[in-house]
Amino acid sequence: MGSETLELMPGIVIPGPFPVVYLKNSRALVFADAHLGFEEEIAAHGLFLPRIQKKKLLEVLETVLGIVDVEWIVVAGDIKHQFGQLGRVERRELFDVLGFLSSRVSRVTIVRGNHDNYLPLVLRRYSNVELVEDYLVVGGEILVLHGHKDVLPSNTSNYKLIIMGHEHPSLGLRDKLGYLIKYPCFLYTQLKNSETKLLVLPAIGAYQTGTSVSLEPSAYLSPIMRNKVLLNESKPIVYDSELGLLEFPKLETLFNVLSETVA
Image 1: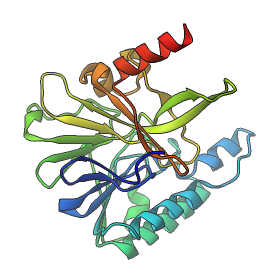
Image 2: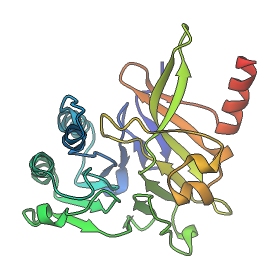
Image 3: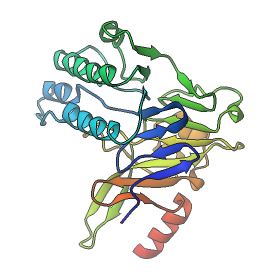
Image 4: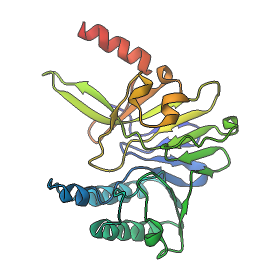
């Protein structure tokens, strides 16, 4: 069994088997990639999925807000899904989620992701919800961004940690019968030529199972992951409601072990 909570560095905590990270000093909770409105867009293409994104998101947030003391919610991009429009259901779900958040904490900040078009049409209803471009500095030492653009400041050594979304990382593991199970995971790594750490968040959206972690740069969506990090030093951290938080070895070690096992 894994651990119940995990402190990655002083004051930076994964507060249980949830796709969120808690910043103690700022009393801030960070999550990414809710993709509200996903089921509506998929339905427009003839595939009907249960509408669980909003329900699961609110369940996670309600649970975590009962565990840690939060005054500030930070969304690291893609709170919504549709590119070309603001869907009717998507708009209603955004109102529901933002209404919940703005009533529970004093401040909500959304770092714009590549799916967050038309979001200002919704946010003007809430006085304590703000939208920022590119990145957000938290506590002077932590940088939060979405990850779809290479927008890192020229001097990243000013920051001890960068938090991003966009990748929806996951780790594929085989069970005793040989079936491959895909587990969403955090990916904790380090920038090249820097002491700055980088934490890639799993998607909080229930349907966004994501990109399998790899040592191959071209496998990643983000230009930051492709060009700026030490992939061999990256550590997956799986979260699961039954298993808890499971820390795995660095990818270089992990894939060597898996290749030897398969051989």
